Length: 213
Image 1 (cartoon, rainbow, N blue to C red):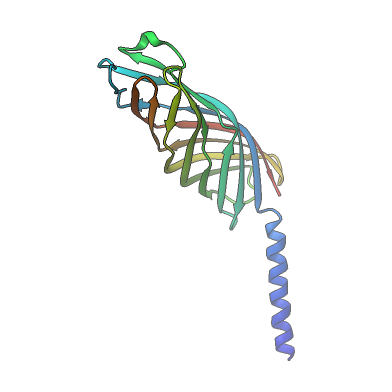
Image 2 (image 1 turned 90 degrees about the horizontal axis):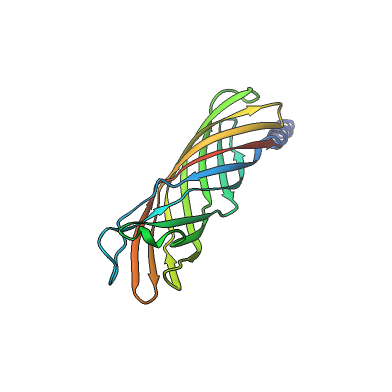
């Protein structure tokens, strides 16, 4: 009986220790991000569209929020979301005379990372690297060339590296760079049907403030 009570006491102590450890196992971050698209298309096709018609996809910036749950002192699972930025495109190639805003859409792109944090907990500088999956939905797609525009959703890999700079056990700064695989088919229907596939290859630069609890 005494042995059973000792075993129970050890189990309870371990549970309480795990609970105490979990008190510093959550990280939230708020920052700004520069979404550089590096996008290419396969050209614009459709009845009456001249050869060489294309579009140039612009970059965007927005505010991001992240939440990471550490599963041990060095590994964690992180969700990254942001205020959806508006991605815009202008005509290029043989139809460059059509000008700006031939396509715009809001980029809703939650990303899940599995991260590894280098160094010891409590260190001032802690580099990290992560691999994960990105889901991108293009909402509110519009074009001045057609009243009905649809862009397909995309699911692809995501990679990022960065570093944390910790002021103390609670507050710090972070900076990271990410690479994503995003592709979307665009169909614009008006007096004719315009089609293209956009191969987004974004490099995303982020920085901000972090809080651990």
